Length: 98
Image 1 (tube, rainbow, N blue to C red):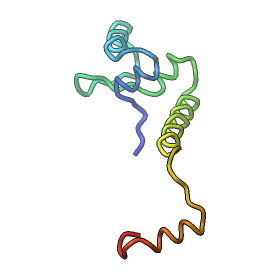
Image 2: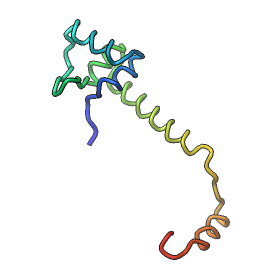
Image 3: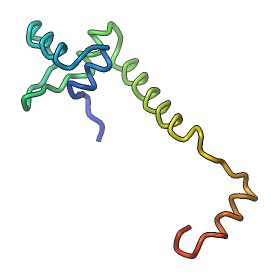
Image 4: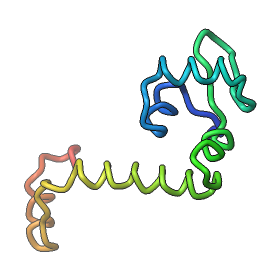
């Protein structure tokens, strides 16, 4: 299930800073929307959106787009087979592997 909070490292990356600097800022400014369940906080996407002067929807859409772009980049150099070559490859696999 998706959450509406992000760990300190991810939050810092979104803000373009280091986790320790963000933690110092959170503690100094006593930001609302920061939850301390353990030593490291979880930061609300609403708080991050406010810090970035945007809406949570825009922030979440951007994060989704970035994640999709990373997945596409991972397979960008993969070999693609047309229908005929794909069928031949599938048929060449030993039974139980396809």
